[in-house]
Image 1 (cartoon, rainbow, N blue to C red):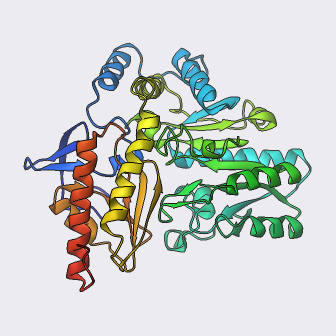
Image 2 (tube, rainbow, N blue to C red; image 1 turned 90 degrees about the horizontal axis):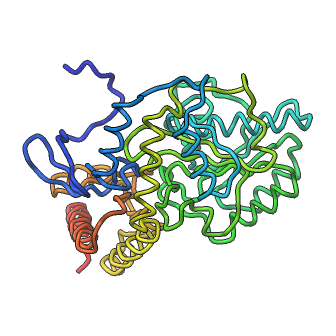
Image 3 (cartoon, rainbow, N blue to C red; image 1 turned 90 degrees about the vertical axis):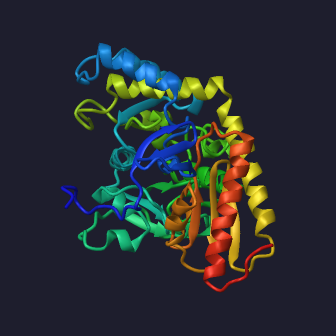
Length: 397
């Protein structure tokens, strides 16, 4: 019997080691990693530059309290602000913590402007984390159940519906910000339509709301831009980043610009481990390797290649509702629940996740070759076709 809490419904796979886009289990079976540790392993596995940087940093200094200056933290902060065009950053340990910091900044913004009970607009089908505040902001009743009472101060709206936001603006005087993902990940890989982010930016300017963008999954190059909001050439007031930033070393970051960048002051927020030398050295190395390999652009090219190939494969399959995504954040929506597909894919040597009950989610490393991308399409197409055939549905030719 395991000593671990039953937090996860684990697949019958025990991973031993990895190299590039491949993982091996303890029985020696090889798997193509189609979800990169849930959008974490942008550089793949056992990247030598990252491994060397971590080893060097571990031999020098693993941890130093934030009561003192940490040079590598300053360097990573400057680099992140440069590629994001933001003004300041708070480092933490995860995406949920980065979103918590975003929520706290929004509440500080509201109180600064005399709003006694500030509220943030959040989206249906969103996912922002599993702390009590981010769980409340998340638009999934299933994962909220059992954790009541939830945290007050949130107003829910349909995703990517600017008219709904305008109606909320007309009826709620205590709104201080809008928080959303440019592409909903756990919600089924749902990109906002082009123009929505620009419309939200304009509305926030009009209402003195903070535009809070959750780029935990979309950030650090996954969609073919450093950050997904850059596809519309706008800038948020607050942004959360994590996942790919550390390449597997836990790190999160909350970035802010303009007046929002000055709201956190000594005593108002903090963390023990956030921004420690090891995590920041990993983050710097990940960004350097992405820049050297031009992997942001590569993620966009690979994503187009995979999406177009999948669309061609399933164009005449009635049980495949949609193939969609941005860059290497790809979803294949089926007409019926397909949770069992993850197990069948693992049996076929492909690791993936199923989200929103019926969406196959693909989040592979950016370093994938064209040949490996084509192999992913072949394996995935075969698994889906087999699954649909088992279900008695049409199988694409």
